[in-house]
Amino acid sequence: MKNQKGFSLLEVMVSLIILSIGLLGAAAMTTTSIKTNSNANQLTVACQTVQAEMETLRNVAWGSVGNGSASRESNGVSYATSWTVSTTGNVKDVAMSVSWGDVHKIDLKTKIAR
Image 1 (spheres, rainbow, N blue to C red):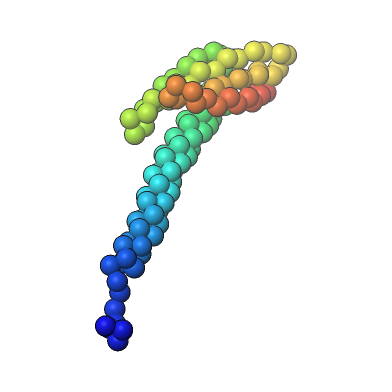
Image 2: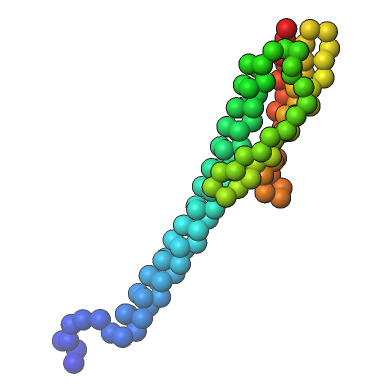
């Protein structure tokens, strides 16, 4: 029996355990990657939303710029944008925020001059 070649059952079991641990680690990494990509996508849409609203405010007549809000839905996620405007001389300070989900929010500020 000393001349037999091949793997014993114990060697096969150990190699399968090592392989399964590696595959479980890859599965966990894939799940984390999907969640991270989803969050990055939502952040990108939120930034695009607030940028579009700021561009809209910059393109209206200076006297028409005022407080407001807007909403948008993308891929099943609702984005609520609101802004407040304060005037100092010939400059309007615009504070804009966009929020989505329960805890996500971006705040941006800009100035619009006459």
